[in-house]
Image: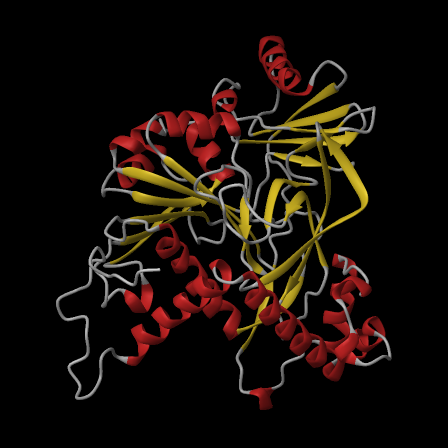
Length: 456
């Protein structure tokens, strides 16, 4: 290891001007937290496991002391002897029961801020829960840490695009700031930050805003990119300075990934959930492999009920959030399927997830019991007849329902185009039912998934 900052864009006045002080407390503490994360996730595996075991013990002790619900789940034995695998799996409905009956497990006397949070409901079952102020701080640190762990160029701009139905009027809300590195922005020279929130925008104005500033890092969800692709040539973003797309929330369509990479755009997918924050960060060398965020979670894959995807066996992803003191998430069924290995083929000596699929998000179930990925990618969506939005649901084995929003009817040619495009991805075994409707009922969900499986 060599500690060398010669290539880092340290500002001229980065260091403190106070006597007997190297750095001011705020940037020093933030940089220290980044070093902590790096040491845990890339350092000695035995030291990491010891730290995780200690943190798990602290969380279990806290839950047992504060919650009747958790005392019943943990049992009457000595807390020091409790192993993770001995605890029952935590389902969404069960955790909602604890939240309703007991509320947050942090008290005002703990002097730790507690916030009300909730999921988007993309899984079909929205979850309201409590998070501590520490969770938000960790998420901020861990996001920044990835730029240092990969040696990314800090001088590039950062653009975040969010779908925002809460806006009071249709259009765009643009927020700018001089730098995106938080407390380290005064220490390291870094690019400007811009956030675009949108709701039914004027596409011409949207494109003008996207091209107004060099993009650098683009942070947004796959489904947002697919929505943009209907009206905006995404490869024009490359000409506008796009260097890396950081996909949040959902898996990246392989064909979409290949197209962008062929134009020199790097892709990184972040595997996370609103309940627990970061779960894994995509390997920079092996697409589709996620290095587990071991400074935040312990991940298991339950093989008792597995699914076959080609040569791979996928099991339910169970996540234990080591910092979930307000609402404990211990062995929580996140609603996804994946494979788990003890290390990555790139040489990373830490748990690694691969073949990560949302059970309801991008998997088809076939009559023979096997599953396969389903991606109606951006290039295919662009071929669909004009529409406002769409949703495809697998409602039964061999049955798909396609809802086309913003339309009251579809002519025979449009119907054939849609059915042929869908069957090209699914195979002939599926019957496709088309529904043209003025408005799709998204039930208030922020994350509007283009495909959802109601069978898995």
